[in-house]
Length: 37
Length: 479
Image (cartoon, rainbow over all chains, first blue to last red; front, side, top):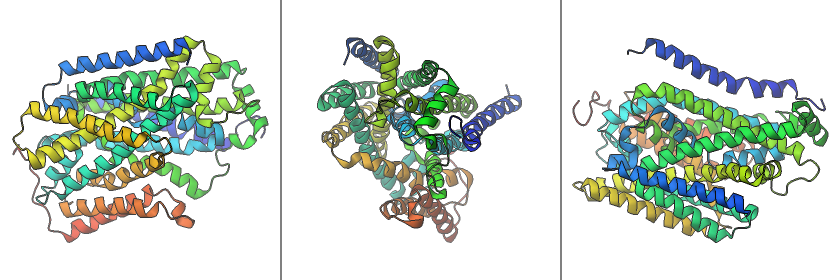
């Protein structure tokens, strides 16, 4: 494994935090569609 | 300290004082002074919440932990991001709306008393005392951390760094109150953001790219690449449990209460979470890259990873600009905690118990005097760099998270909750944290916030169900 990140590290590095960001964007866009002017 | 670094520090500090003066002109009553008149826009509320939350830990502690132990420190960042997101998603808008309905509550103790119509006033007194106690320690710890760092890194004397830093923070908080704190937080948040993007990117480039950087770390110590290295299940759960603390931090919840309206929350959430995730990635990669950069000559103090990298990579003017981000991170947390403590003293003790008829002008001046009084106590505690305040910070985060967090959540979502339930939850949360923390071994290795949070929630449900159901909710002003 010398010289590269293990798969588990890639998963923890690249999935939870970006996923939360995507959720935030989705809830923002969805909320914008339903909000009254 | 080099001339250019000193010059950028001075420009920055003068800028913060200038913002304090501008805020002073917009502060007319106590609501303005302790909650900015509830008129923060989305961007300021978002970055102010983020900068108040992220102390020197973001630029010193987290890069230092990654530098010393590797990517297994990712777990705390994941826990914090999830906790902050849930706080923005489910608490922010409701708290903004419900605190206004609960007699236009300006502080968390004020909200607790009005929401539960607590005639005994115990909820207000106990929560105000917890705020004063924990935040005085917290503020002192922030000052100690900052002063030690400036002494070790820039050769400034400990006392001089402590007094100068405190003077600037107290000046703008004293005159400008919440608006000064929020506007300076906004600028400080931007500084931290830029510093944490620029530093690791330039460092990785210097080292010959991502693969070369990872390769060097693999040679230095391959365990630093593994997210599970030296981690137990309890260790991972404990690190992620830090995220639970968000629901009860008064200095962060105050930003939710101060946003212009609940309709501004989705945009604030987007900005706040974007800022947080990028800053955390920046801090993690700063520590990570530092492992490769200093592989030949390891740093004596891991917490100086960010400072050492900026000084090695940039010319002194750019380094000075980036290093102000450390000042920004420390100041943006200390000022918010100072102001929340001042509001507890002014609104929850002075006005509530001694001077119900006090004029707005009198209350603002009591608020300002409280800022000075609390700062003086914090500086006195911080004068001794060997004092134990630093070790009490984890208690304070867990203490607020466990004693206030469950009450805030249940108060917003469960109409059946009663004042006795809230009191039982507050006491159970605080006692569990204090009792659990010193015990070592087995299940007691779990961070005290998790059991405190669970037991406080159970106490709220049990005590509320044993109590008489509350009458249907109406606001204190009858609307």
